Length: 354
Image 1 (tube, one colour):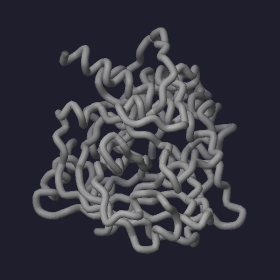
Image 2 (image 1 turned 90 degrees about the vertical axis):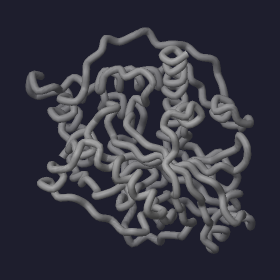
Image 3 (image 1 turned 60 degrees about the vertical axis):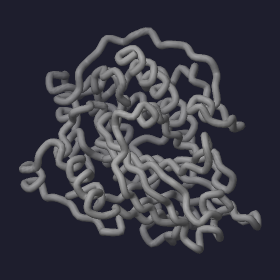
């Protein structure tokens, strides 16, 4: 269970700093890539307030992401499923294969959080980059829990601030208690079990928002990505998890890749009649159709010290033909904060290492 005392035991409080102001840029330009039409305005006040609130919650760790700070990148290949072309005309389903990078991470914005920490490790994160051409790509970003605690970025800011203000010495009712009183879905999300897997190779992941998939005939369906381990889900009980080393998931990841590829199915859970496509807190029924999208086969752990790897900024918006954003209010703000925090991370890395 992820409760406020556990989070506050991990975090390190900071004084607020004056937010930086950056010029308007496209997300792909920031990744030194080609220009896409959709812009992310990094001057957005909400994005800067979210970044500041996460710093207060987890502490400042220059050169690292504000959440999912501890992670590892792997390389491999995506092979589309034959039926994927019935769903979308996206370029990576029309090719025999596409190179990918896949990042696994723990939840907390703390670089040394233990892999078996019951409060800070989950939900674990995942990000997949499909490398379509030089400086051209599309991404999937998700985590190991179906759904999201808040519907909007403003609500998520309120939640982050409530968590930061609700330490073990906070007066009752805490700011988090008050937030939960009016946001029962957030309470359910934070208090839901988040079991620790025996390996990243046995963990499932869920994209947060829905997308509009369009095929070459112009037919469209809404759906959400899921990433499912071919080896199946396997989790540790609390007693077994407590005996593991603090880096056991990342150590095991490296060891496993030396022995064999790690494979995942990518599927799209298709929305049914009445399913909320613009609300990431709404979990769709499990009986909804899972449309096969393709398979990822990971074969190598990437060099974590490679400057090109470290500067990657993932984008929750696909920005590719055949996969369009829904009207979910989280989509743009998630993309904006990824860019804002990524710019800061790159700048800090240059300042630290030259």
